[in-house]
Length: 160
Image (tube, rainbow, N blue to C red):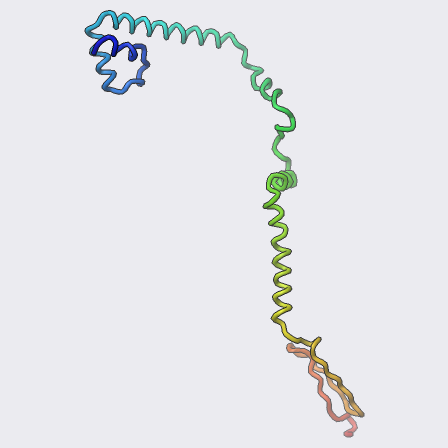
């Protein structure tokens, strides 16, 4: 490998190069003192920059960072967790209006469909049955059964 091929690989961090490139770079550095010196300079510079950044970061007071960030967020965008079950329900209804409306309408629509279905399949019931009972000295007996009332017309107790 020539110096021009090794130059882009110099200063790479451990694990950045694939094993083939790393082996080629090591082989080149063992035979080229100029590239080896350049590699040492780049590693020293990287260490200095890292130390400088750490020193500068340690001088900063980050204790109020979270408070500063929260102060920049408008109150309308930030809301705490809703308190209690009613608060959670209202929050759900506010965020899922379509689902809440469909959930409320579903039982009403099911009841309406059931009412219409029963009304169509029931056929003529007691309201459609027209019976007139006329009795002249005959005793009428009304029996209540599970199928409805039954009226028996017969002779009176005096035998007439």
